Length: 206
Image 1 (tube, helix red, strand yellow):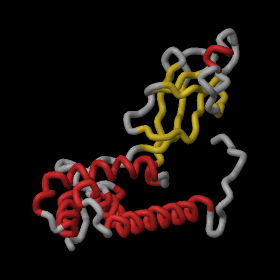
Image 2: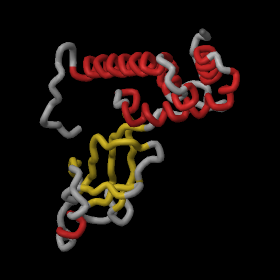
Image 3: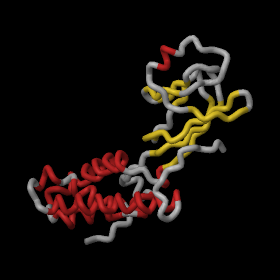
Image 4: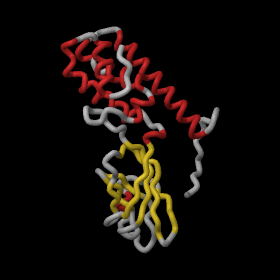
């Protein structure tokens, strides 16, 4: 099997494992579907990102690579405030609240709507970003360099519709799951310390 170090060698490794010349044109699709799954399943520190800006009309436009929010901060009266997510009902039930800071945010479409407060505030958001997609013009990303096996076996799983009841599908899925679990355990250890699996409840503002 080819050593996986980039997009080209990943496609070659998938082709080698499948040993099906008729699936060459389908392999990029397997990889694309694997990436979609991994963007839903993985939440590791390499996916963490930060964005800053100024809200416009109480709206913060989310980055194009946004997957999941971690924290939202706005500056009001020179003080940095941490905002929490609220239900969409908050936009209606708090519509008459004026004069103070935002009391939270509602995620809506491609943006965050600040619940009340001034329309234009400086913000900082931390979030989980999408894994940069591999392609002929983008041969590497952090995940293929860190865990090439996860890319390989996740891609092979998506060959299932073409190879029907091949017993290897369950094996590939099991290997991919084991790698994901290992990544999560390693990430927890790096962020919270050895043996510490308890998340902190209170967050101090930076």
